[in-house]
Image 1 (cartoon, rainbow over the protein chains, first blue to last red):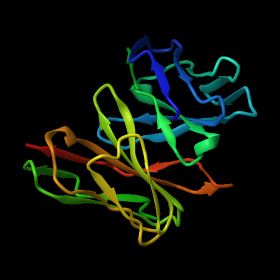
Image 2 (image 1 turned 180 degrees about the vertical axis):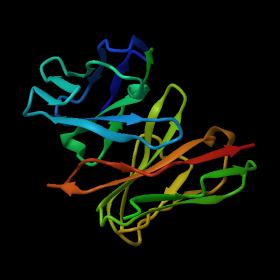
Image 3 (image 1 turned 30 degrees about the vertical axis):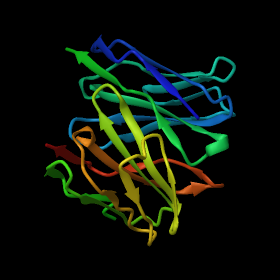
Image 4 (image 1 turned 90 degrees about the vertical axis):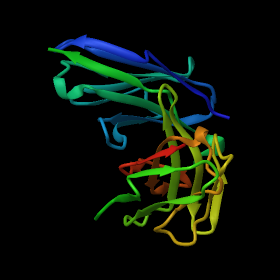
Length: 113
Length: 115
């Protein structure tokens, strides 16, 4: 089955700098890669997603890149702000088991003022 | 729309007790799922359902049962609680686009402690 690894587990960046979180997946047939943000005491919320027919997607300060050959995808946050502090999860959905969405272990992002 | 609702928010059980975690959604989503969240281990899929009457196992199904009698509800049952089931449980739902799960909407979670 699908396995998703996420790095780093914790990340601290200066406000205004960029943050990058990386994930790798095992199922070469996976074709859907969402990213979720979880604030303290709440459930995760989708912030951006990408499908396998696209190499990059941007939404304001957030971008996701996908390298299908290497089976990895990354989240990029530019001009970080205090409200970006949260836990971020990547996930992957395999074509062969399209209804299973498997999550990475999460990255705790802290923005230093 | 209330979205995805979960009850209770907190629960303490003794080893061996049984209970049901409730999950409901009012978005007419075909797909519903249960995850548990433990420190350092992210969200692990317990069970999921692609429609009423259809359920399947996720990554960590042992010790949990589910059923899906209606589109709206997807309860998670612990038949004999164990301390290893102490966790935060999240329910999620989404549309199925061409048979594939899409953006998942998560509930607020249930924090369960088993003594």
